[in-house]
Image 1 (tube, rainbow, N blue to C red):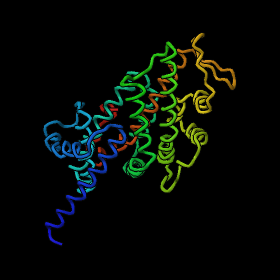
Image 2 (spheres, one colour):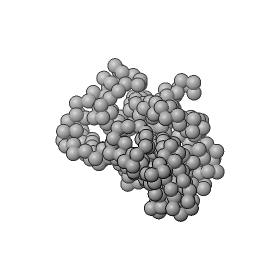
Image 3 (cartoon, helix red, strand yellow):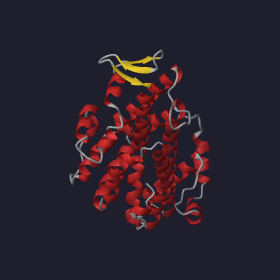
Image 4 (tube, rainbow, N blue to C red):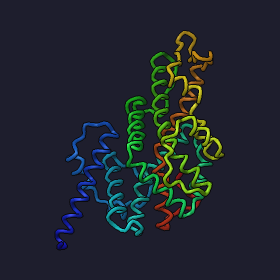
Length: 315
């Protein structure tokens, strides 16, 4: 095969990859965007110019620009030497905006301290552990489970929260909206908590390869994760009683007394108590959705030599 044919083959593979990723992106965002239109925007995005002119910093990108940065960085890891400095730094740069937004969000809802012990565990991983975590998250991202987590979180953010970060519960409409939001957080965490099972094993020195944690029911996953001191606070961000009540259709909105009642055991949550529980669940859903980006950043930063000190880290 000639060099020209080889270049054509590589070009076709890149375009096929871009189209596949664009379709995935459109499905996650649930928009009516045109694949060819998004493809044109991606092709016009100058990745190298961004890296040279705008080294990793809290720069704001439009959704399309952020996607272009991510997909072109992803291509470097597939078609270039993934361990080359250029390829690794593009992965660092593409993950940076997501992690910075995550950090600001957790601080804004006063939930960062819940995640810091686990983040400390991730920062303590050696290169082998980071490689194990990366391999899992790469597969999870491209699985139907990973797509479900991303799509559910996008729906939660855009359709239920409508761009807000929290819901203030004070009337029947906001109460029912709060229940819808909590239900969507449950769906994200029911699927996404399997990720923490992998990190439980990695942090304990066990190889998670070949384990199917996704087949475990939520109760079994929750019980095992509570054994890990750094993961326990994350699991407990989802109120078990509220989760079970909503899952079984046992939660009643009492608009007269301004509270939520669980019909099964007569347990009562005031509007304020439910709002607090919902805020914790929203943080868990956001962090769980972004966990793969955290691992991607740390693994690429470690291999590229860009690894920052704990006092100067972005998350």
